[in-house]
Image (cartoon, rainbow, N blue to C red; front, top):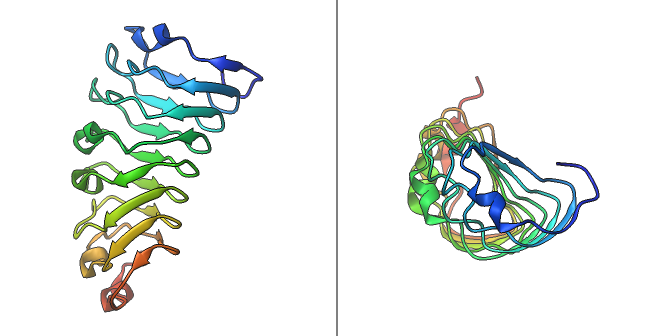
Length: 186
């Protein structure tokens, strides 16, 4: 039901469908909170709700089925933090939640998820220090326009697949790690 002119709230009962494996409600005019039961009763593989008017938090149990590989919720009015349950969601490959009003620290285990390829979280209000280690699979991190602080870790070059690292307009301090020049270009 994506790319229509749908409006109003999403019925809570949709989140309780036992065979639901994908949610594609992006590019509509949907509003209200996202039903909290999304992912709790099914093996949700993808959750795409970007370009709407949703408010409130992301559902906590999106990865309860253990197979979520995509979380795309950018350009809404979402608040709160990244669900703590996502830090154990090893199936997760991409997270695009930019242009919202998320706050809080990104759970430490999130950054080292085995299959994580892309994290786009710019234009929110996340804070905290950048982790010492990243998933070796990560190829793209966009975290500009937040409130991350501390040093950029020298171990960033250990993420051999990292091709894009955008971190402007945060509160980082210290020296630019010389190890950034050793990042792989292959």
